[in-house]
Image (cartoon, rainbow, N blue to C red; front, top):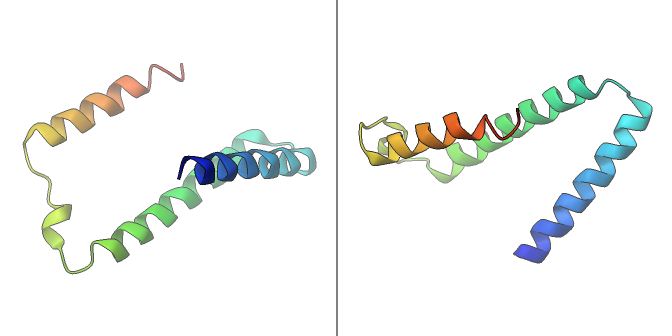
Length: 79
């Protein structure tokens, strides 16, 4: 799986470089990539968890706190 992930990431970077040479607005390309990845991830999650609505319920437990901690602290990496 690591080899497949590395190969996929390399292909993505090459395709992104090709796209940016013909479409120089980097911010718009990044927005489209993030939007389409969000839609794709949502579709995959809905398909994988069909028939199990309890997964989507927000519970006040350590999983929620750990997720919020990761999200708030990951923003500092990109600044």
